[in-house]
View 1 (tube, rainbow, N blue to C red):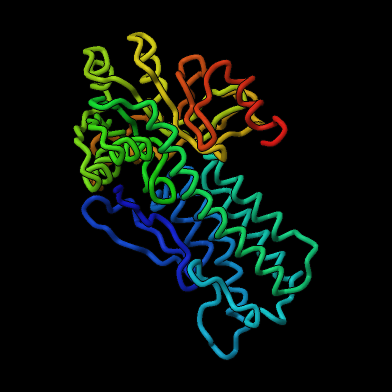
View 2: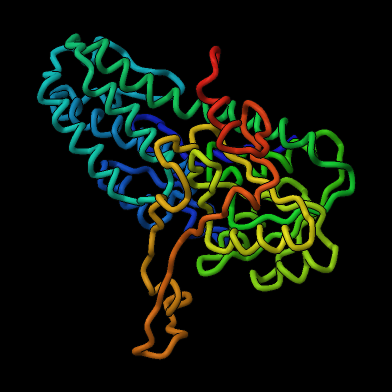
Amino acid sequence: MSVFIDTVDYIHGRVRIIDQTLLPGKDIRLDLDCVEDVADAIRSLKVRGAPAIGIAAAYGVLLELENILAEGDAGGKGFIFDRATGFDPERVKGLDVDLCGARLIAAIEKLALTRPTAVNLFQALDIMRRAVESEERCPEVYCGRIAGDAFHIHEEEIEVERRIGLNGARLISDGMTILTHCNAGGLATAGLGTALSVIYSASDQGKKVKVFADETRPLLQGARLTAYELEKNGIDTTIICDSAAHSVIASGKVDIVITGADRIAANGDTANKIGTFGLASTCDRFDIPFLVAAPLSTFDMATRSGEEIVIEERSGTELTHFHGIRIVPEGVRTYNPAFDVTPSDLISGIITEKSVIRAPYGENIRLLFFSPGQ
């Protein structure tokens, strides 16, 4: 069975993450002590991937509540919240809900400034904001809702990823070779992944698959993270440099391309790691299926098309330096967009936890979100 990766969790009053900047050389867990630590971890890519960022941000709000309660805990009784055990309502009695709410909103606003493209971040924070701004004034119920919503975001994501994997595995035949870009595995989500969950599910069903994984410059998420996960799961994996992917597809060595997504517009246009658009274009040229695997939480129905998606531009030092060593001459300018947008007409299908969405995307996405019973 597939190896579950505990990318982010809330344990004994702290947010625990895997420091992904150190993989694959070091597998280090960090316990984050305050909302500033969580915000820094998201900005610095210690935790990354749209679903994982959303979970971490929700837990960042819960961590701020934890610390507010700790300030009034004269007895020093230790942590209050834990995903495995929940919390003791007796421990939160006497909380000033109004003062607490103001601090939690400030924490939400701080976390919202960390990264602009991944919509899961903002959806998770919207859920937490509704809990914080509720009219409930009983401290036990108020804290219970905030903790419950944060834990639910995490636990729901685990189930969603399992269902994405099962839906996507139906599209994978025994003996297929799959190409993927960046990291859309457990390290980017809640444990199984989106694109990689499809691969794991197919493998668990006894299908033999091979994977080409792009290295994904400039931070090598494919070489460092995707290869790390696939090797743990016993998947036959070959790393290629990003610029080799197009010739590998053209040569007939690839049967299907599957990537994740950071934001999907209402018309199906999809933002993902820079370089995805080029892969989709090459697949279109050579009649290779190009699939996106993403939870419904990655869809942004308020964004009409990819033209409205804000693309994060990251520091030029990611290009000019490698392991602290300058590799670009002084004075040379850099441009470092973290994502690009793939138009929906280049996408063969979007694998979600509900179904595989096909064109026409605008119509079928609306049906999925707004039909009675959905």
